[in-house]
Structure formats: structure tokens, C-alpha cells
Length: 461
Image 1 (spheres, rainbow, N blue to C red):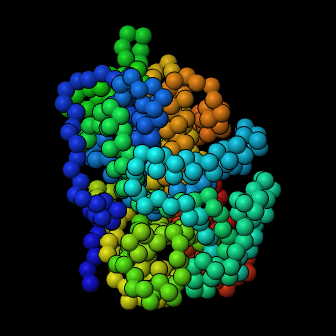
Image 2 (tube, rainbow, N blue to C red):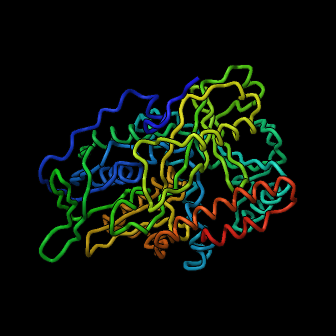
């Protein structure tokens, strides 16, 4: 049976056909102009309007709201830091890193609360996350993860060991960790709901409008976002472009556009669900280096993701989520390996998207009041929740508020750029080849492969 390949994502296919809003037509002025109508841009507009309703806010979007990672991700509202607690702690101290992690835990609840308050029906359920080990090496890493969490002060309410079979019956599972700090969401529903909400608040979203360049504020002129359809002048311009940041010449090497891919099945028969378990909305991941992520959708499917072909030469970005057959085959094999009962269940859709990865894998947020330019991103795949924190933090930075959020260690975090090509492409290909090799070796080793440690060194994690 054939399946849909690309067309942005299954999440959008499940909704009514996309009807992009009107593009920018001529020149206009705003107090704040946001580039990108994904989660970061939409949350920023939402919280600014909540705090100061008279602000004139414009959002410029190249395609349509949610077109990028916001409408293609795995639907994990996960409370993990989008970065390294150790890295933040080395610069800002342990307490600052702990505050950031606690704030991320709270952010999961914030998203659940706002979705309910604004009537955004996005299949949101705070169902927690299960991470399974499937060999002795992975089980040892589970133990190390738990020990590390205890060292940082996370208790039984934050992370605990469980029997995987008690929740989801994964073939070959040898152990599992459970955290409540994760919620399931239908990504496109959340993006569309946020877009509708901010429009109702008076935010102007112009779609099918490509920003070609950005001009900083000077003593004689406002900051500006320049498009072929007109120019938006504003006190502040916020770049919220995540994996698409590489399309800006001035930021081409700031963040690596990493590809991630997904498949989704047709609805599973009741007999298959009885064999698998998974009666809640838990999110499922594993401890492999070449890891997977999955959810049980609200309509009874399994959405299953992984890296596939992780990077395109010179940071190229796909157009509509088209996915190589090799990647589809790998994900299909992984799904069947985890859940043999799904072997005869047809696929419905496959797609890919890009996420942004800084050189040190630590996300950042910044605003320069002199130039009027700011940004947030580099979420390394943890953006569904982190974008909400970014929106609240940008609100406080833009309104010149000195708050707990503006003192978090990811604010004004700086990192060097990625290497030029072909070094960038060679490094990423080597890194993921080593991770795949390490996973293969660890099926018979009782410890983490040295090959994986070599990949970690190359990656900069």
C-alpha cells in the first residue's frame, strides 16, 4: 500500500487544507517585527500582546504558519534543557543551570495551561516520557543518567526507574526511565491554534513573504526587515527562524540545519494495541546513540521518528519534507523491531524537517537594544517546549524587564560558528556513521562503545 511522502507533514494533512494568509503588500511600521511564524515567533507575539496589548506586532513568514519544524516535529513537549547543563554551569555556575532546568520543567505545564485557556485543541495531554534500554550498554547509560540526575537534585518526582512492560511493551527492553515532565501534542494543531490566537489579539501575520535582509537600527533610522513585497520598519526585529537560519548569508554557519524524519502508520487494530500496551499518551524514546522518538497519536497511530539522512551539503534545506526511501526503510525496520506486532500495519505518511544545532549544542537567546536586533533558537530538537520559554523571555527582554527569565544562563549565550564546507559535511557524516556503528557494536558489548565517545568529540557535545 502506498503512503504520502513529504507534503510538509502528516500533522498538516490531518487538518483542513492550508490556506496561507495574505502576504505583505507595501511598506508598514511596527513596534516589533518577528521573522518566522513558527512556535518561537508565535509565542513571542502572544506573550507580548498579553503584556502590552497596544504594541504593534508584525510576523513575517516565508510559507505559512508552522511550515518548518513547528509543524513537523514528533509532538514532544519535553522539559529537558535544549543544551548542556554542564556547559551552562561552567560559565554561570551550577545554581543558574539548575534554575534553567527547573524553569523548563515548569514550561511543560505552561503550555498545557495556555492551550486550555485559549481553547487550542491540539491533542495536548501531559502523559510523561518513557526512555527504554534494549541492551546492557544502554541499560548502563540509563543508570548513569539517573545517577547524574540525582547529583543535580532531581528526585523521584522528576525521574525514576520503571519496568518498561508496565506501560509500553517494547521488544527486548531491559529497563526504562520515567519522567512526568513531558506532554504529547499534535504539532500542526498547536501551530495553527497559536496563529489564530495571536491574530485575534491583533497581531498581523503576513505569509508567503520572504525576508531577504535585515537592517539594524541606527541613529537616523529604525531597524527594518526587507522583502520583495515591501519593508517593515520597527523598533525591534526578532529572528525566529530556527533551522532555516542557514538561509541568511550573514548567519549561514551559526547553526547547523539538522534533518530529522518521521513515519506514521495507519490506525492500529485493537488486537495490535492489546499486544503493545501503550494505553496512555506517553512519549517513547530510547538510549541508542542513533536514537528514536515516538508517540501514540490521538487517532490510534504510531508516529515514529529518527535522524535518517542527517545533513545536506552546504546546509541545504528541503522544500516540502520529501524523504529518501532509505530513511523510510530504516524507520520502518526500527518500528517493527520495537513492536513486531506492527509488521503488517501499513504506513500512511513519511516526512522530514530541519532543526537548528549550534556548535556546542546549547540553545541561546539575545536582544541588542542598540541595534534593535534579537533572536532565539538552536533548540537541538527540544524546541516544542523551549520555544515557549523563548517567547516569555523575549517578552521580558523587549519590555526591558529584569526578571528571573532574563537572568537564565542561555540569555546572551555565545558560541563559535560551524566549520566551512567540506569540513562541516564530512564531520556530520562521520559523526552519525560512528554512532550507528557504536549502536551495532553495543548489541554484544556490556558497555558504551569507544566509537560513540569519538563521535561525541567530533560533535562538540
